Length: 116
Image (cartoon, rainbow, N blue to C red; front, side, top):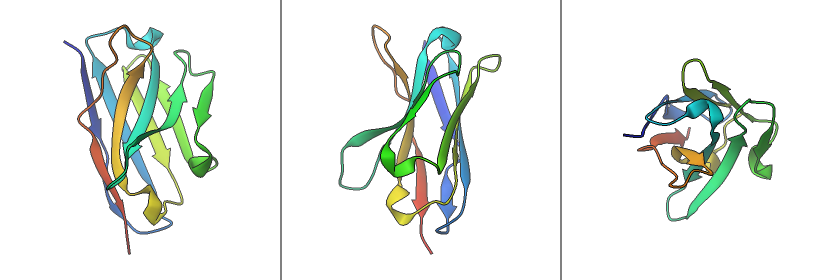
């Protein structure tokens, strides 16, 4: 079955960095668009970043452009999100998610808390 396992979250001070990882199994990772989404307390989920299967194309929401970088390693079935210059408003549960499959799949999520 499809599994998406995120890791790398935690508590960080404003201006700090974290790197999230997502290891995938159970589907053709190398041919699938992959995304990172997040859900802040009391808010709905929002798409943060996406990457095409080859890694040649990415997209970000405006609030993270220049601070976050999405990447992937198809040989390892892994997706990453490098987050720099973190702000308190980045506090959320971050999810790895497929995009464009007949049924899209979410990971269990990882907590990122930005606070001094």
